[in-house]
Length: 239
Length: 294
Image (cartoon, rainbow over all chains, first blue to last red; front, top):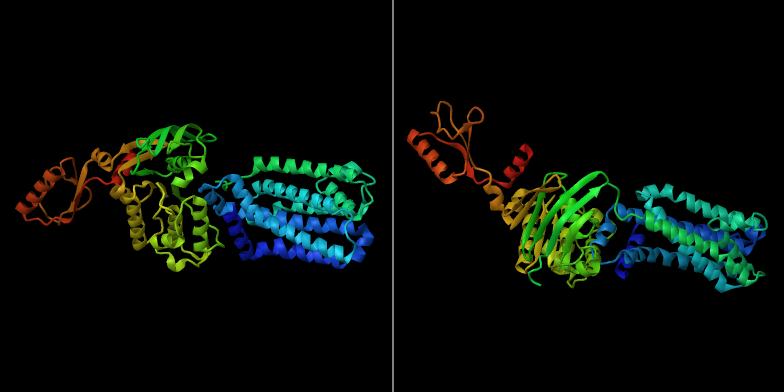
């Protein structure tokens, strides 16, 4: 697993296209949100900024990058090559996903610290971390499922749009309008409950037990994503 | 234990939807043997090879490699090296990084520098795979397959795109593996390579074995061939010689030595010069051509 992760890290840093989507783009968007925090706090509070930054990193830095690299590794038969060794399927996938996940987590942590120092400290750090980790696992699952429908790295630019734009749209909607009305719809949409959870964790004022319930839809999406991934993921290109 | 065949395939069937790629195929490869799997395009070689390598499941039948299921990677893969038909290396990694990665995952001990030396890639160690020529990629693929001198090596079209020097290097390396006792399974379009090196040949056609045996057994069923041209106004040659075109003649015979002797005697007596004279046993090419006519 570690040799695969190591080689994957080298490949990410050598490929400019991947580097831009996984690092530059989320950093730019995150910096924008945090530098204009007065404006955005007025719109939806610091929790809204945290949710938007989280989903920008999760949708582009993690999800879109993961789909692109998986499609590319499959297209050039690198996956088949790895499967010619004694490495198991799960260790291959862990190895491939580890670097991009670690980069995203580090990016997210740095931006959260920056947001906290620019605005206020989050009310419940444990809850914030739990919400973010659940979101990350959900996005990895969705990435594996989407990779099954993606034939090439170029194709990934199209296939990743529904999920990446979708979760950002949901986060924006929930973050700005709250969950007073259409509560269950907003919570059941992918990213909806995670946004509410992150917002609650940052701003506080909601009992922890109420917030923990919000993990359930994210975990549900995680299970659905992983189930889809096991059905749809392909190791070799279609012939 | 030592009598267990390295590869044991029993009534293997592989289907893709309606297409029946491999039909009831059975064969064994013994320890230390050099086995060539040959066939026309679409004969089912690749499907067979991929099933034996553990890359795809059998639709029915049993495949055993070292007595185990080849899909049990942890158990089987450390003992085998696979040279894929299409390389499958990341364009962004260097030659050295690629070998180090696949070597580390092979479960065998070796050094990157040693395998680089085997196929003369030392100068390319720091070059990215995207900048390699087709032949260099084949050599890289071979280097990863022989990392740690595995007991079993699969070579799928190993010499495609290689120049003569690289081809010789590769076959020398294979010879050294065999001195080590390694078993080799080859597929190739260059039948000469199989003819010169294989202990046994499995000749596939439409998903099943058209013939299987040693090269001598396969070629014995077809006649040997003598070809020559006669100058204009030469006397009529012996009756075995069949005229092919204006001056070209062909003799097909199961008694190559005596027929050649009598042909040469006839030419000597009549003071005729046999031009472009060729005589030899049937090649595997001819066995292949014969499939097409059946």
